[in-house]
Length: 290
Ligand code: HBI
Ligand code: FE
Image (cartoon, rainbow, N blue to C red; front, side, top):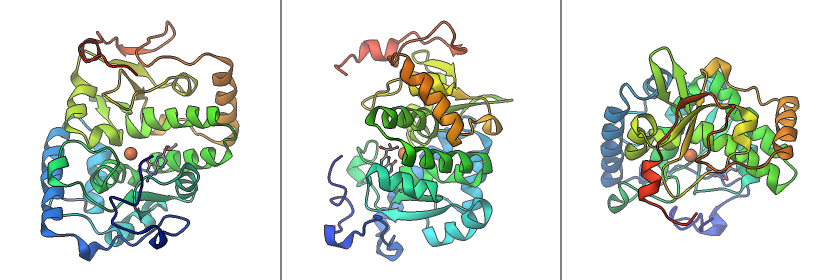
């Protein structure tokens, strides 16, 4: 983890133990709002017909619009009564335990700073555009809201780095890079896809990646890459059908995952429900050590 303080402009002594700081909405410059507007317009256009309907419903309900960076106070006035969630500002990536505690208590930690114009297409750490545009809209959906809170609670119960890694895979392949099955076909619901123009197209339309039905144990066993588009995407069978992630079912899935070998991200297993078997063309042509 790179120093979470650098991008925020805050000094370590200005950051409390829960890492929650003031958004300082009034401190954004006109250039910051313009960066947001450009990112929003590009992404909203690309997502039409590609993201699940619930995502646009959440954007609209919360006022996450192209006119400028949203004020967390205004979003929370709508979000909190709807699903009990609220958005809190943090300086960047927070330690796992802090992250899980916030999620379990229905607080979504969102970075408050925005990328510089020269980083328009790629940033290493999540900024406010990834966190708010990508993650926040679906927190208006009750099933998704419960899933993320249950994930936080599961994270707080994890006892070993290996179990923590299995939980992180669950989050990665759903909340960050999940697809979802709808009557109209496959749609995006992961924030890592929804906030990235390249991956919006790749995840849904490229012949390269596998698209495989989501199965909790299968996903807990599957390694992922952080340096490129995913080699496999997992498809949730609808919001209502997301796994419950209560203590008993997480422990049961974890016990099975511990018993079986980890799986490399490009692999398709005989028991997988395959929507698309990828031809691997993207990663073949960009092979790098991982
Ligand atoms: N902190 N702000 C922030 N956002 C994240 O997505 C995040 C984090 N800390 C840890 C983390 N994610 C992951 O490593 C956990 O899901 C395991
Ligand atoms: Fe994210």
